[in-house]
Length: 120
Image 1 (cartoon, rainbow, N blue to C red):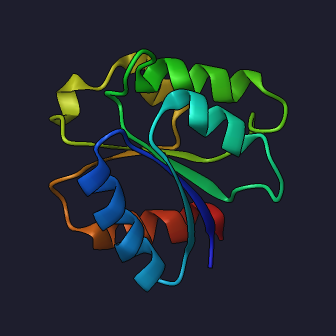
Image 2: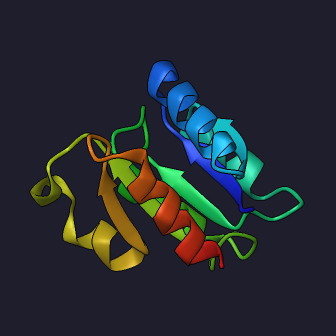
């Protein structure tokens, strides 16, 4: 079981994804904004993996990832981009820093498998 930080500003997607991850045996803490995510991520206990959307209000996924990498408490936190965008829409910068990237349209089983791999 992984401790997962789920970051998505879309309440419906966030709730659906969190429920599915919980059914898969993971402990999920959700954040609706980058600011909330940074506050929660720096707390204790530490997260095993973060799942984040690329298109967030005020700070996009790339920028949030940079902020996570700059903070000593979250610098080595594995990150999965989970976005509705086509793969080519992800910036090279984000891909170079994230551990993996999945498209929201793909089955949540792919996300579960990825989380298990990164947190194991």
